[in-house]
Length: 116
Length: 112
Image (cartoon, rainbow over all chains, first blue to last red; front, side):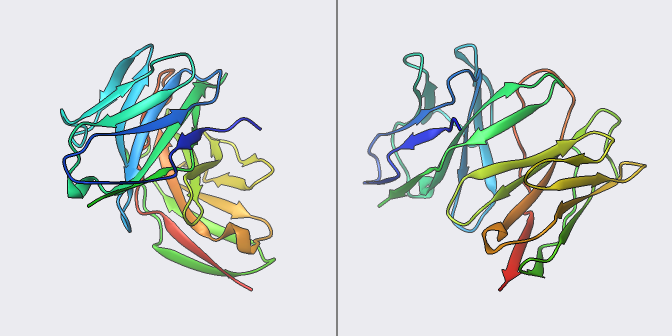
């Protein structure tokens, strides 16, 4: 069964450093998302991406964050200058719209980011 | 976004059926009801969705009240692998991408 993959599985970085989290969505999907989950808290929406542009972003997704689909397969989340509070699990998801007009999002296994 | 209410946690014995309730009294006529779950240390996983009629798939069944103000996710025979946080989510019936707003969900404990 096709699945969303994410790399790396774990990333440790120093505060102020840039990190790039990578995702390979399911190949025929058109909609892409990033979510994050701080330890012990809810899963939070960050950004959605369709047709090579951001569809929607949350308040969390400030100027330090950017997303890109550099080729036909990868979808990346960049954090320009990491802060301690960026430590979280980051999930990528992709979806297609079903015949009923509803979408099912498929999530990757996540990247655990630790900012020291 | 329409709100859902779920119990914080539930417990069930292995190999018994589990009924996970969800209240959504402010649901609109075109909102679909989706269930996702999150196994420990994993990403969320789609379980099932429905609009008005009850739905079955290989993972679970979804029973939707006639007035649509509540629904129940049914795991017919729980295994230890079903221990997870279960999220009940409303999704507008629009043919476009839409973010998922996760609540706290119900943490399901399975007792061996």
